[in-house]
Length: 120
Image (cartoon, rainbow, N blue to C red):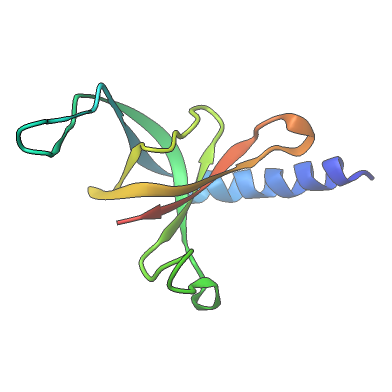
């Protein structure tokens, strides 16, 4: 059995768990953001919402170093139906988060899902 086959089996087991624990989250995409020259604030421009299936996993206490991973950061695992973009906001159960890090599950170059670190 190859590494790819092993990984595919593990990912399939995760999908089963995914189906049991899945929640709807929302990516809020911002476009046309510009700096207001008078107020010096970032105008939000236009936004679009993308709803996806995901599940959240809290980081273990031993993973929290206060810099790369902070108290309150959340790990979000999504399916591959919609690629998250750096700069997207994420809404989970009505709470707003920003994407800190985007990782992929992509054995053999085929994206099976996304592994996000999000922060309030």
